Length: 367
Image (cartoon, rainbow, N blue to C red):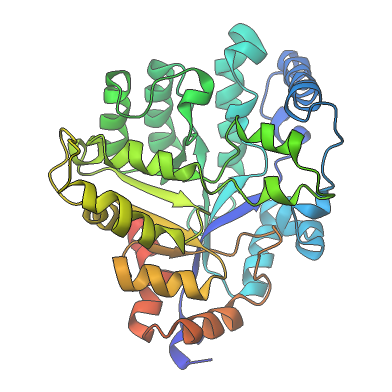
């Protein structure tokens, strides 16, 4: 390990925590506990009967590293800091194992949903409050009520010192317009003004559950290999609609997209269309330039894809992550893996430092 790396502040831009039902309900009025439990039951019933089509749920061990998933760092802030120290990681962006926005909605909770939504974000904020610098929670935002979302951005920025917010990458799955629609204009301006980064984490597109129901492999290996692909649509909706150019201070990071396909996607499909037979009103620069300036992508261990992205986009839009406690995690050996991965990718130390530390320190205002 180099002397530089030994003292460097590594930042993981994708880590996960299990916010238990008890943790969330402690931040809700007692009268809302039953509402929370009923929504969870309703969501599980829908998942079992409709999404999985009566097929059994996958085992937890298929989605987590057994050692990491049992570590206190998966459950409480004190344990999280200790797990980070053990791993040599300075700060992390933390995503909940279950996004609150998936169950906290008018359909699930009726008129109580707004209060519960705020309580869920408060639960995330209380976790981060243990160390507001090192723990950065990806606060949830709903898109079905823009007035509420705007007020929540203002509240989170003011009261919780939020640095980032998580949005569904697929608003159309909720019957909502895509990101370019005028209904979001006030929200995008508010996020810009608050200097928050938008995070689109890898998620399951509703249509992908049809693959789950058809997948004959024992661990649903076909289904679990495909969630990255729909993120191509999300990238296009942000960039090819001119939305990001319209809001030049806005930054969107794609979390866990996989890297290897991105250079091909931009070089072979997106950039050439600017000079072919396609018209993209509001788009004045090559899509790859917008990606470099206003977007970014996280990765775990992917030396070949990392090298390809580095060569095509440069170092400034790439962000390292541990993905704790999921199967791809490098915890608790992150520093060792950083050395081996970047050596394999043949990336100079100065740019490696940007990708594993400086980019995130700048983006999230950590100094």
